[in-house]
Image (cartoon, rainbow, N blue to C red; front, side, top):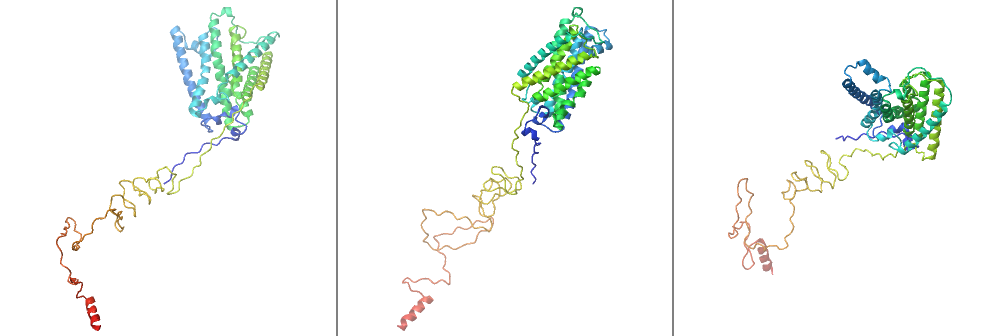
Length: 453
């Protein structure tokens, strides 16, 4: 009988047990790490994102209709696509529709890849909050200094868009609260998708970190509608965020940079200093953005070198079991044999199988040849078991010999011999004389011997 064997686990790559897994290779640290895991995770995450966006859109439509039943579909669509700092509800819906990328990806990754969901945040298996707060403080300082220097340089204003002064915005406080509360979730969600999911997806198939850093950049650029200079600035941001993620072994530095950058951008719009819907960028704006990102990268590198410098995860593989099929008639001690195989000596037999010689049979089974079951007569052709001698033997029978008899037939009772009745002696057996002499051939020989004397 063929015994099915469990499927052996996928072997770990060389860097998992050697130098350690970098951030983009952390898929190999999950419970399921097959080549198909990133693809299925992405498909399921898109489904969750679409469902969540539909729910948010329906709730927003119900809210708008309850507030103004005469509002048309065009007005509702504009509030969902145009960032208006004077409309905190529409601004909140736009930010929330991007923020749900984060839970959609986490939930899909937990379902498909199994345990170890913290590996999509860092090599530590979680978000390193102290390190992220340190990076956030560094980003705030860098943005304040560079922005102050930028405002001291006279530049041409960017074309396109309109500015709304705070005194002209009746929803100034509400819009500012929406920016401060929801922008961190929106920026974090984008980092989990573009630096978390996409980098680890590429890293599952390609080991070199350059592929994981550069391949997601075009997708991130296409998600932002700007001119050539603006998209160049976005590409520089994406490359820097990917490099920081690989260098530090987690998303914390990239999340801090993205959160502060978006809060500054939306905050300037709320305060009337810029337009959130502008699509063109000046040369000075591009230079300012590149300088700001470069300075932040340098500060993070300096802070990282002063820290513990943990950026990889080394796995210790568990000893893989050796699967060997059992030999017929030999099973490990303590396990019952499979039906159809004789048991091993010293182990109880399975019901329905004959026991091994030297072992007592199982109750309800016929005994093995040569082994009578206790309390049963021996099998045909085998001598009966000799009973143990009685320590107090009975007195021998001194009466006349009993006549032997045949065994009774089936259904008959055997006659009981009467000891008081002496049977007739056989005709060929001489009776002894009282004096010890007899008429046997021995006595004749004795007489002839005495006459010769």
